Image (tube, rainbow, N blue to C red):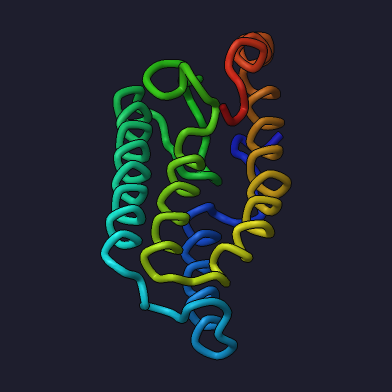
Length: 155
């Protein structure tokens, strides 16, 4: 058995690619008000969401650092995290990415980014989360199954 989650794409690449593609599509095939036309309210709301996403992501990454295990898919997990944000959701970093992404879509006024969020979430669920969960169950067995029963996948 491989000692890592065999994900189809690293999540930062998935989300960054969707941001870039959304901006490109917004420029080539405008949909909605147009790229970069946010008013002060949209900038404030999007900025607040982006800040929440960054904060949640930082708290989640800190748990990995404290535990001394890698958060990079493709590298072995040595510890099962269940503290900090991981007490409430099994995927706080991915929730952080979604919140940040949504905030950026609002700030950039990119309807395409919002449309692309649907396939991004499908890829994240099928190609990343389900594969990570299979890996963690194989690696940590009953401890992971108890964690799954106690903590929801998303919220």
